[in-house]
Image 1: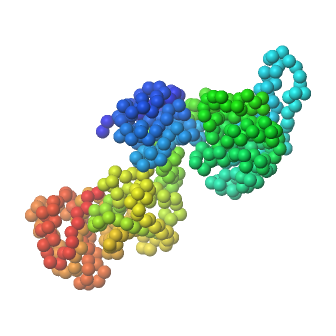
Image 2 (image 1 turned 120 degrees about the vertical axis):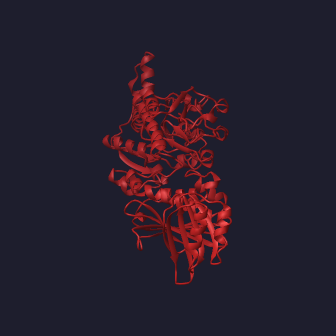
Image 3 (image 1 turned 180 degrees about the vertical axis):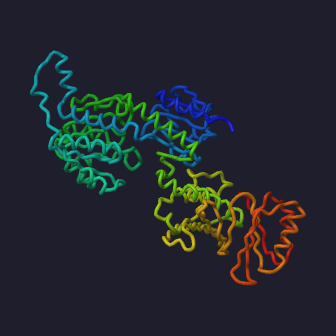
Length: 524
């Protein structure tokens, strides 16, 4: 296996590059590239790192045959086709913590500049004038700041603004209300926020749902004299509507670090004295640039070396405590999926996963993906595109959680269905050993590694003698054996771990015994 190859197309701080090189990665820095310039070079790289200057389109992704990770040194992902990356099983990760402080401080700086008319006053004095009353401002103390988007940056802005004596109200449908109350944010719907806020600051990503989240209808219900700050993403505000309501006097002013089109050529907003603009500087500090480079580089190294994926937008993230509890079950779940895929006949149309025991108290989304990944190993599926495969193949998925662990501390049962139902249950013993403990309800104890021979048979004498004789003649050693039955003389199952694989001819010889109904070979 060769070195992991990393392509960097936008400026990245040397500290991040050194982390990758120290981990043994081969790093190429080629400078900013247009999508079509990447077509002929992307195919040999495992990772590509970009900032906002490089667009990773569907066409680039399709040519990235070896791509495993697209890394964004920053937060925004509107220059990356995440949907295409997901369908190709490529992880898309960003570095959201790295520029939190810089973006929050830039927001506060713009809000202060807006409140005190600092840019226009600066230009006024430099032009040789001195008319003070023209630049009468307003205090932030006692004013209401409405924050739309209460992630890391939004919460940091709230903390700083609270220290300035501002009242903080916020809107974010995805953040826990009780957590926000603890840091002094009153959560409300967006309409209530727009009606009450003296200043409104945006900290949300640009998506189909957030595009023009603020338009004429929303400006109409805002307070007269409201001030707008956007250090998030251009496009969340309808710029034509903003221009209109500034001209009408409804909006006192706006401070914009981002635009729908950058640079904002011929934007009428640039002609308004009430509008302060900066060229997308939210993360433009020495500290932020180093932080995002280091954070992203460490995440990429961890993904390859420890199989831990942090800050991926298309893969669930488990914290270290959860990962330590579930890591063994991720491996077991994948193997159970592989096992089932080789004993089921025909196409699967329904999957049921039942979890029982202590593990039900954890986030099991990643475990689910590992099980699916194992079930569809032949489809080149991974934890990124596993959910998409179910959708494409119209396979239903049901999950059940039961706190009681039956005879095991934890138990996972996966059942697949087409014309028939087949199930397998697995657990991890106290000695950390993975075990399959049930197959179709038959109690067994098999190790899900290497070659397994599965025989559905009647509970009659001579079966083990027959199997042993056939395998012995072929020079195949039996590593371990387990038998399961429901009642004496009834249906039963025989599972053997073999030291080597066997061919179809040997399987057919085993099947010749009258009491053996079917034989399957599973390779894990």
